Length: 212
Image (cartoon, rainbow, N blue to C red):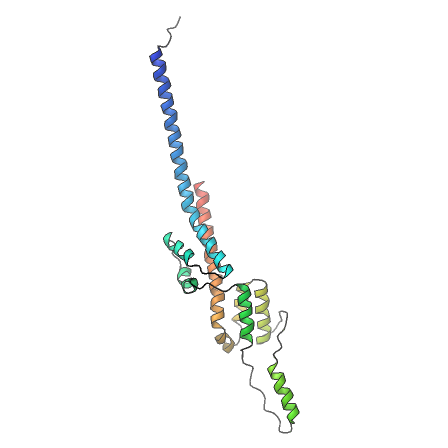
C-alpha cells in the first residue's frame, strides 16, 4: 500500500496553496484598481466637457470647466477664445433671439428719397409715419435684402441652428454687421464651446474604450 502523506506535508501543501490563492487575488485586485484609475483619468475630460456644455446652454459662468481642462493638461485655442466669456457666461439661445430682434430695430434704413415739392403736408406726414413702422417678416424669406436675411437668422435661432444663423449673419450689409458684431461674437463662442466639448468627449471616450 502507498505510504500516506505525513500530516506536516499536507499542512505545508495547503498553506502554500492558500498563499498562492491570496497572491492571485492580490494581483487581480491590483489590476482592477489600476484599470479603474485609468478609467477615472479617461472619464475626467468627459465630465469637464459636459460641465462646459451645460453651463453654456444655461447661460451660466463656466470658469470651473475651463479650469478643469487646464488641470487635465488639455490645450486648445478654443479655451483662450472662450476665456473672455467664462466669468459672465454666454447668452441662451432665447436671449440671443431677443437680442437680435432688438438689434434689428436699431438698423438704419436707407436714405429717403427727396419729397416732391407738390407733396402735401398730409402725404409727408403719412410717409413719415410709415417710415417709422418697420415690417419684419414672421417666417424665413428668400432674398438678399436685410429683412429677408434677418428672417432667416431668426428662423435658424428658433430651430437652435446657430451655425446657419451665423452664416446668414455674414450676408448682412456691412453697417448691420458692424452694429451687431458683439452679438455675432457670442454666437460664434457658443458654437466653438460646443465643438470643443464634443471633440474632447469623443477623444476621451475613445481612450476609455481602450482601457476596458
